[in-house]
Length: 173
Ligand SMILES: C[S@@+](CC[C@H](N)C(=O)[O-])C[C@H]1O[C@@H](n2cnc3c(N)ncnc32)[C@H](O)[C@@H]1O
Image (cartoon, rainbow, N blue to C red; front, side):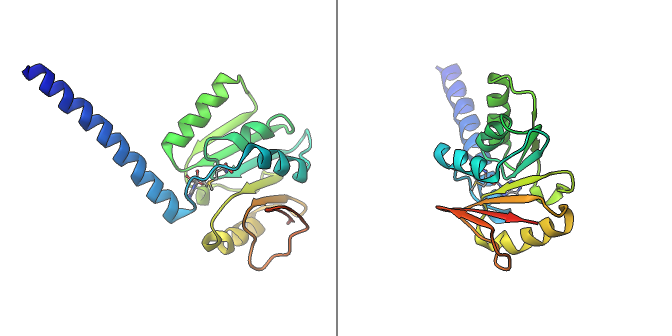
């Protein structure tokens, strides 16, 4: 009986610690960028089509969630990277990558603010309006002229988009 009690206590502690860990990261993600709201598969396709990825290009999704945009992009470009702050979402993406045997993708578990964007041709984002101004500054400072940005749902406050389809916006640096 006592063994059963301790086993139940340990299992509950592990489950609650896991939930707490997940919630703390979700809160951290909301404060430092955006909560996890996945782009629908239909819009993933629309974003990839609109940005017209080329075979030699490097793509990065800033806040890559479960990795769906990154894994879809690998079919159209040389290499795709996802940066994700949440360890749970990072490991979900890695698992999907391994399951699908995709070689030309990298997932980084970090905050996007630490990533140098200079070597990328295309950036995708799905971020809350509060951070768009800071992101605009970072992109313009680091990315080469002619690079493309594809944004889901939100626009940059001081930057004119070149294309719009539904809730997707494309910009040229
Ligand atoms: C709205 S979701 C978009 C997910 C994915 N790009 C998609 O379109 O399906 C935003 C993601 O950014 C992540 N995130 C928030 N702040 C971040 C930061 N500072 N650095 C990296 N990822 C961040 C969140 O955990 C979340 O997965």
